[in-house]
Length: 501
Image 1: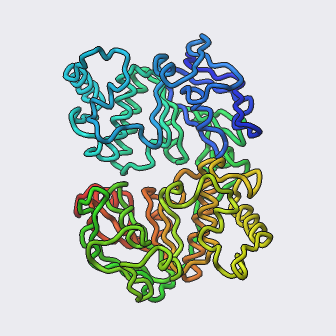
Image 2: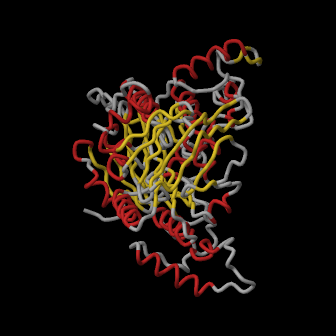
Image 3: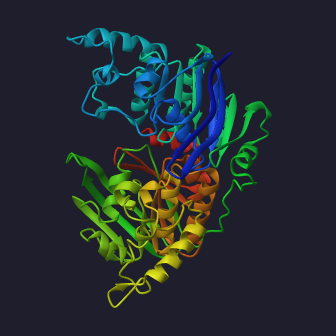
């Protein structure tokens, strides 16, 4: 039985067409993947379905009846729930307060006890027990995601949209999520699964719809898909190399040395506890762990964005523990930040202006205090072309680009600076397979040229494939440093969960 049809959906933003004549059909009780390159229109299509975007051409049918969805409240009332990649939870409130927030059934006096009882019974049924009275800020990332799913189910969602649901989970948490998806499917619920991870789509989904450049490319059953390569080719229109070639390691001198590093988080609580490691020239050291275990603070200390409470950081034997970001950049460091909006770009500035943020005062970019705009324009065109940044032009505001294209120009800018030390945090997060493999190859090329690379990622496959050594961090402590040849999901997974071998 067809539960959802989206017919001839066209959505435009000014002169830009995000979706053009897209038709999608979802069967009741199936797990349906939505796959496409960055900027292919996946999120736009789902935001239309969830009521985030009002004005569009086309028609939406739920159980063969036309549905006019103008806002998320209407979508929820029609049984559609969405778990966004960045969770929509209020950290200071309890789990149950987040669940009932905004519900129509709330009376003048809120009966949280009854709601908590209903929530607990539902959580137990799906093997996702969460303390309803725990503050969201006290929950792990995996628990927060389970809370988002339970919140949608509490509101009687029958169609559940999961946007990149495994991006921040450990292997065991991914297994738990997939088990829950299978239970939901068995009960007749329908899942729309947005992911860039081809192996996950092959494992959990029944069918897959592929979008390319805003248009429908194909809808296939997973049984007829030969392998990951087949899906990748459908997505990008050509064969994609799914492995990143890497030369034999040729380690040089120690470029980055971290000794007994301690620091506090934004709440002034200890987050890093006596961290020790080195990164050599010609080496990729991967940092592995679930988000929120100190990786962000570690990178901020190294790049001068956060002050350490004790310990030492040295770059090429120079003490930089108390240096400013500008002073550290001058030592040959490039930084691909985890939050491009906060640390990597200025949305209201043009792409061209963003591409010179780190280098405007360097030779070539300026002369006698004046910017050389002609040269800057040529250089900006080269970087956008090299990293396949899809944009109307270099004068386009950076905030108007899709998230994946924003990531590509930030990565391109940092790699173009030819660093001796590259700090890359989730460099491929949110990127499609083609862009991911290209950026991974560029990071490996920097390593092969002799640069020292510190790479933070929650993607185990990426870390195992690219890293020469992998440091596992849990609750601000080093759980171990594993050589690449010994690394596997079975070895890294327990360490990420704090279980010492």
